[in-house]
Image 1 (cartoon, one colour):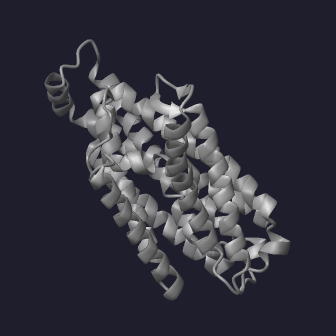
Image 2 (cartoon, rainbow, N blue to C red; image 1 turned 180 degrees about the vertical axis):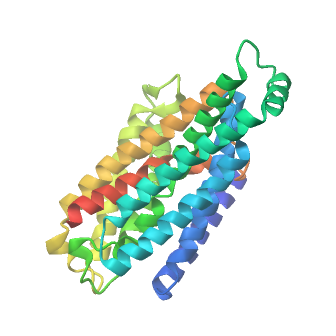
Length: 323
């Protein structure tokens, strides 16, 4: 328990420092967050690779770990061009380029594998894979690698766009004197924190019927409802605090609290679904935690599972409200 508390405090301190840098050094402070997201994506991809391998879904681990850096670079370049050309649709170009590179990478791996059949046969013998052709084994290996490219790397690195949303030429955010990405990123990070923390507290106090006993035995219906309600309540406080800060008073007219709380409500549900999704993966792998990266918490993937789907959702939600 002590390790969990100390780790939580350290995580909060790191996030606080990064937000201070983002606010006080606007010229390049946001890039510290980008670096963090890139590193987290690589580690999460490594843990996902190991989880899949435990269920005999073999993959290219090295490619899985390296590829998030490619997505990070593409997203940052497209963010730059979006800001330089005042064109939000560079985000769509980034998505298309990411998808194209993912497909080309696994296709390249497949073709190289076909040219090195002896190595594939050796791997199949080591892993005791029987009654399967080398071509089929290679195809499945490439497909599993593609899955890791998408989950967690591709989805999680939507945080790059969230972190730079003020540079994406969204209509309502173009002429603001403040950096709206601070509020957007703050919201994306806090929603899973609120839901996770207060689901656990409410569930332990009230108890009751299990939400998904076969997937996540610790989650209760009361805890889930409590987590969502507390997330909405505390997020309303966040909105009110920002709305009363100089420069953010535009929120009262251009981005009302009801719209913000709708985003939070849906985001809270998505955060819970993200947690359950990763629990299903761990169940299939027969493990309690995805790793031991964070003392007292388990693996990194266990900590960011809710954020993987939150990142693209938050970008889309604020994009809709800002147009």
